[in-house]
Amino acid sequence: MIPWELLGEARTPEGTHMTLTRRGNEYMILADGKDLMSSRMKGSEEELARVGCERACKLENACVLVGGLGMGFTLRATLDVVPADAKVVVAELMPIVVEWNRGPLGPLAEHPLADRRTQLEVGDVVALLRRSRERFDAILLDVDNGPAAFSQESNAGLYDNAGLVMIRSALRPGGVLAVWSAWDDRKFEHRMRHHGFTVETHRVRARLKQGGPRHTIFVGKT
Image (cartoon, rainbow, N blue to C red; front, side):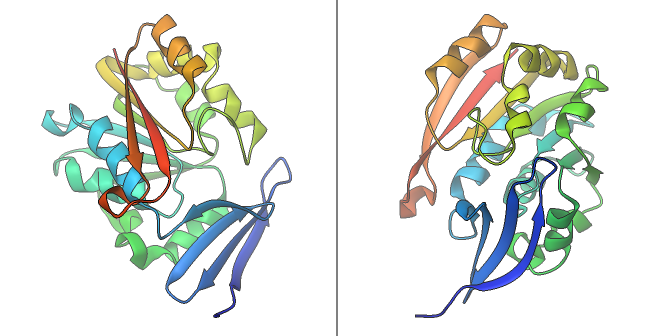
């Protein structure tokens, strides 16, 4: 069996050990040794962009926020569905993840950071949302493993009551919130409804028709 090769490592502000590894053509990012994302499972990230941008892709000069760069799959899928006059802001907390996407991970998603519609914001997506009032037609959150924080405890602040109020204020009228999650979360669904979102849940395979574990996409429409 081909061994895993360590390509890079760094620590999050909270001290989580992040590593990028490769085995053959497969890449994996781990958090404290636990699988965070794999290049073999990108289908649900692509579905996040499809359902989250269903309205934005029909608008002129749409502005979409992608929270979390990861391996670039959500950003690439977003760029593939929005029109040429759209702007896609991608917020990534970890500078090393940006470096990985400009290096070994770049070809996996066809270098989405090089697209002229992409605006990169290196920093906490929460800080970006706090200073963005009625800025976005769609907000796609692929941060951590969903509403239950996994790699960064502060990510939970995106999904609590205060976080949802902040997100609502950053959306333009009619805007859409779409959240990727590794698990179902009924409490999060109820919280979204409490804050005025009309909620749909989409349960999809990680590799879509090719199977894989089931992931959940929460879609909140204003």
